[in-house]
Each structure stands twice: as structure tokens, then as C-alpha cells.
Length: 435
Image (tube, rainbow, N blue to C red; front, side):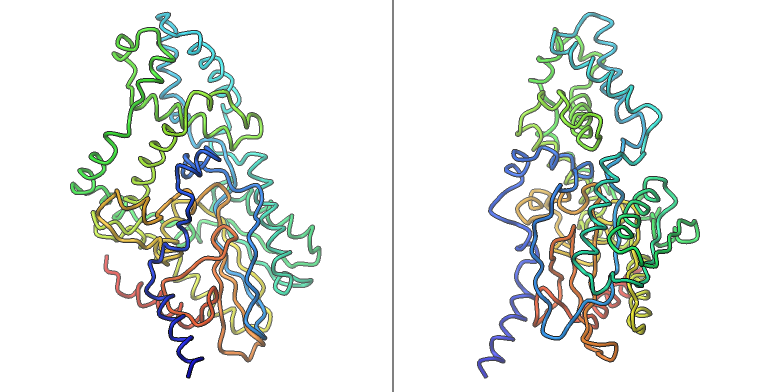
């Protein structure tokens, strides 16, 4: 009787405690940014250099036999020139009018170096990004040798974007170094784009409803701009305001500084010294709210944005159903983008990222921190366990960025979940969606 009672308590706690409880530690976002300013850059955040998490042993008799994965490409150069040109052109104009302070001239010199290094490399995977994916692949083999053992099949898919293809190759080659007899296939084809990188145009067009726009403007207004920076860079801030937008200049110059942390050439740029923790933190708040409106279950636009990845989730389930029937399925690795991974995590409800609210001030307190989901190289791994091919009680464990995660369904063996429970939860949710 006591054993039954304990099991019921575990199930109830897992089901009804706030889903974000596990992701919200005593350390707040401001503290994280103070330790690592990269966290403030949201989707430009750098993947951790080391993963120290300890994985919980599987229940007695259960062994991993299959891995289903979706991962973002590694650190890259900025996608296009416009992200850097916004502050760069403003600085050049000010320089032509002799309106730069000594600090401003040093900043422009640094910007010139960055523009020169980046030219012609827009969106490319950096050397640092390749190392991230190599290390992720290496850890996957070492963490799950039962799955990725000699002779195992590993099917890799990538979107048709070069940085994703290179990320796939970097991961696969490192896995082969760890286990030379793996059977690895790689494919990057337009025929897979419908689920590998589906961008729902209807959802995209309608995410910024009048209600969302009003709330976002109210939330961001006190957090934009930086008069201290203007006085540091320009001799006469009031004069240059005729051609320098205070809010855009602060935002894009800060992004330029943070983005360099993804590039091997210059990982400690002097631009970082222009900003303090409070300023980085305010920018994170602005970006985090926008990512929530765009891809989270935001009530201000109907909580529907995560369904942009409904095709991918159905494919993940269908692939798993097929692989479970095999004696030795191996792994399926998919390489894509943050605009797929973030809504996928929200759609599944990993670590409570299915949070629904119309109050943007609640995001931080409730742990909806986009930087923790999709840094460069981010990944979602679903690890499948059973005792033998005849074992129908298949368990899964979800790893978000190689760390054990929670799901919004009851379980009697956390952090493990019954596959059939997870499968039913996802399909019921998908079947309830209407375009």
C-alpha cells in the first residue's frame, strides 16, 4: 500500500508541478549574463564548452537502443551584411563629420576589422562551430555505446543550407573516429524540407497581432536605447541623433559585439567592453519576448506558433514507430535551424516551454528563457530504452542540449517516460490543431 501511495505521489508531482520548475534555478538571467555575456545574445548564444551533467541510470533491465535527434548547426558568421551595416554606416557617417570621440574612433577601427573578416562569409559555419558539433558527436557515442556500437546504422539528414550540411559532416566524421565501423549515411535534399525546415507562412504572417504588438511595445519601450553609450561614442550625441537612431545603434552594436564570440578569429572583441551587465540584460529581455511571440505558445496570437513544427513531430513519431520494430535500429540525426528547434521544444512541452501567457512580464519569472533552448549547436535528443526487442514497454529520456529534461506527462520513473504515453500525448495534441 505504501509503495502504491509513493508511486501516485510521484505521478501527481510530475504532472501538476509547474513545468518550468526544473529549469528555473536560484541563479537568474542577470546572474547568468554576468558570468557569461553570451547568454544575452539569445540565438547567437555560444554552446557550452563543456557538458558536466550526470545522466540518470536507466531502470533495471532497460538499455538504450535508438536515438532520435534534431540539432541546430554550430556557431556561424552572421547571416547577412545588414545586421552589421546598421551600426557601421552610422559610425562612418559620424566619422565623416568628425563626431567620434577617441573611444568612438577605436570602435570604428574594430568594426572595420570585423567587417573585413566577415565579408563573403555570411552564414558560414565557423571553425569554432565545427568543433562544437564534433564534441557533441563524440559525447553521443561515449554516452550511448549500446546504440552507437560497431556495425550500428546512423542515418543523418540535413537541410540544404551549407552550414547545416557541414555540421552534419563534422558530427558524422567525429563519430566515425570514435567508432570506425559505424554505418553512416548522409543526405541533404529538398525532398525533406517539408519537415526538416518547414516555415508555416500563415503562422509567420500572423504572429504579431495588434494585441501582441501593443504588449511588445509596452514591454520593450523602457528597455531600449542607451544614452550612456551615445555619450561614450559621439562628441555631440544630440547632433548625431539626426542620423543615428539611439535604439537601433545600441541594439545592433551590442549584437555585433556578442556575435564575435562565435568566431574563432576574434573571440574576445574589445566591443564587449562598451557594455555592462544591465545593458546586456535589458537587450536579452527585449529579444526573449520577441522569440516568445514568434515561436512560443503566446496567448496574444492564439498560442498556435509552435504548431509550425507539426510535420516534424509527426515524422519523428513515425520514424520511431518504424525503428522500434527493428532489432537494432541505431540512430537518426537531423540537422537544421533554431527556428525549427525552438517551436519544436515548445510544441512538445520540453521543460515547460509550452508555457501559455499573455503577460510578457511573466516569461522570465516562469523560466521561459530562449537562450537555454537554442544556442549555436543546440540539440534535442530522444533516447529509447527497452530490455529486448520483444519488450513492448519502451521508455524514453529526453535530453535538451545533452541535459536531462522534463515532459508535460505523468511518469513513474522520471526522468524516463513511457513511449506510448508520450506518443499519445503528442498525437492528441497534433490532432487537435486546425489550420
